[in-house]
Length: 412
Ligand SMILES: [Zn+2]
Image (cartoon, rainbow, N blue to C red; front, side, top):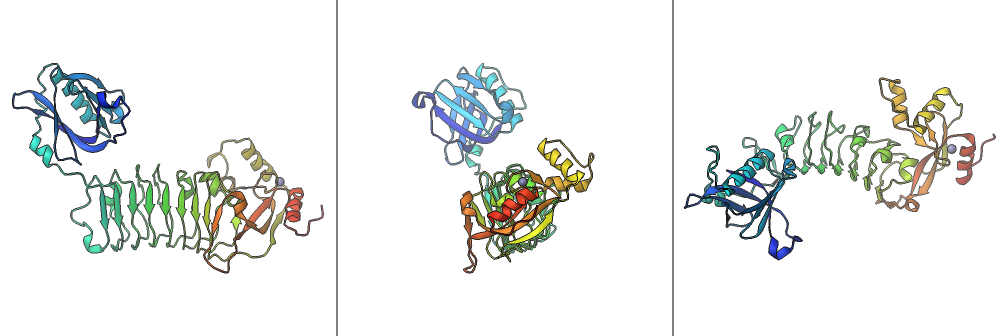
């Protein structure tokens, strides 16, 4: 039998357990030697030679506490090597360890365990981890993709909807770049558990994410140069994102809750859209936001009042209480319209209380650098200050905002 996984061989005498060696992909197997004894053979793909270890009365210990995570260590007596295995198939690893245990006490192995040929192990190729396709003719239409791929780049290959589903079943994929194609829609029910980078630049996407999109470690999402009109609330649920590029789309509004939901966001690019002003929640910066691109938007350039609605209603007071006391809610308990209001509320720019349906709003140019955000502009005629929508919860707070902006205050 043989098993492909990550392997690290550590010499217990040399390293005192503090080795800086990195685990590398390789293969470990069981073979019968010329003297009819079971031996362990190990080969790292980056090396051409294999190492053999005698098994009978030569195992010091088998460490298998994390076997269900695909990890184990085989400690050999002579030479004093620790063979650390990780990212292994759990069932194969269990079979390997039980076989090693049997062989170490001199028992024969079950007939299902076949001896691996050393020659075959030496001939094994390093698995293909990366594939770059730069034109349609290179696309493996018939052959499909190696299942071991970790990085796949398919540019200028005239990919269109429906997109080849074989791409999305590659279990090990961490980087997927489908830029410069003609994709209108991604398939629904995608589950990509290792994906940290998704680049869909220069396609025809109208919305993102597709229905039932699961990508629990996605950090970098590039949707620039598409046809997106709305930043979907489902996109804001990808809370692991730290870089989001929405440049050159048709977006009119930045959701007020963007940084509340994307708490890890560091770089946000909304340049070349149809944004008139940015919400105060974004202008104040999140815990991590440091870079904001907003050039080439039809921004409002002068101070103005956009809303004055201070007739307090029971709904407003109730919704403020739901937020303040963190009362759980969903579509089954309260009407959908109220759920949507609760999802995208703004906080008062003066006292930080939530405002939902009743508030006063002014748009004032502000420098975001005061909040530690670097603003990138490219157009020469645009200033570094950004029009910010400030909302105020009451006439008292509103007057404070007007005064700060140098505007005429309201009579109370
Ligand atoms: Zn207030």
